[in-house]
Length: 227
Image (tube, rainbow, N blue to C red; front, side, top):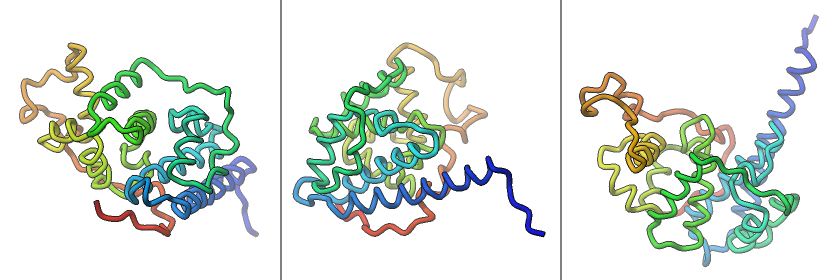
């Protein structure tokens, strides 16, 4: 006799499949509409992946695109209209009255990124907000941004947050590195070890960030181009 899971398990599985379809569908729709003259393909890939992750979360736990990206409805519409004309339906259901709820910790990280952009463009201001919000999620930052691997996050940092990338000379894990700077700037001690080489938790900050992309089960229809 075939044994089926509980109603809750079946619902969870259904939501998971719906979220997977939403992730891939949103990503494909955005990348299929990208304006290459206004947004280079790698930057388009980053935005599309992050928006797709937020869209999937809306199915899984009811988080809105504003909650998932940190951008209010007006910014989301402007971003998609600017870089992905024709894909406005991805953000068409956003609540125009919803304002992002930002904790003091998130404000500190957003401010750090905003003050260390490469050229201060609108694109980088939007990226600072999105990266900050995705950093509040529990996985590696590159995973919660929907990227393929950590190398893509490092490329993003070098491209758009060059002062911070140049400071990460020891290739510390990005989330650890960013919060370490915030703690230092606010006069807080993140750890008690006299130096990293003597710290018993060295791997926590410098260990590998291998893992599966949260979108890895799907084939991408567009490869981000070279810089």
